[in-house]
Image 1 (spheres, rainbow, N blue to C red):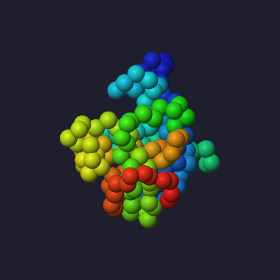
Image 2 (tube, rainbow, N blue to C red):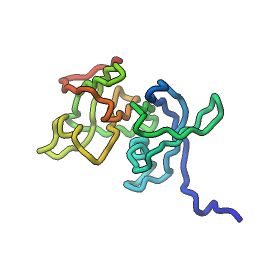
Image 3 (cartoon, one colour):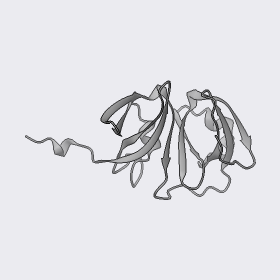
Length: 161
């Protein structure tokens, strides 16, 4: 008897993980074909901010499935192949100094309430463990707030690590 009708349709999204203490790991995560929050596909940020404690990563070399504790994921990088980055009039330009020594420059492109539109307010939101930082036109980092040592606002962010 097949239980295929009970399965949630998912696709593989290619990512790079930076995991403590392992370092960089390349593979693919499973994202839903249909988001539970909006029309269209599930974004990797949605998948990372789900309540589950572990993230499933499919490796190619070696060919295996791994389960990573989300608390040990420093950041996740993926390419925005669909060009789904929102066009925000005043994105927050920031530099994040990470506990692993990396300095991440990018933009936060979120529609924020006028009374909570500062970087400080965004970082202190309790509804998400991972925040989305647009590094350039095509590259997005999902950064674990627990690994941010300090953050600063900038007029203009440039990519460097």
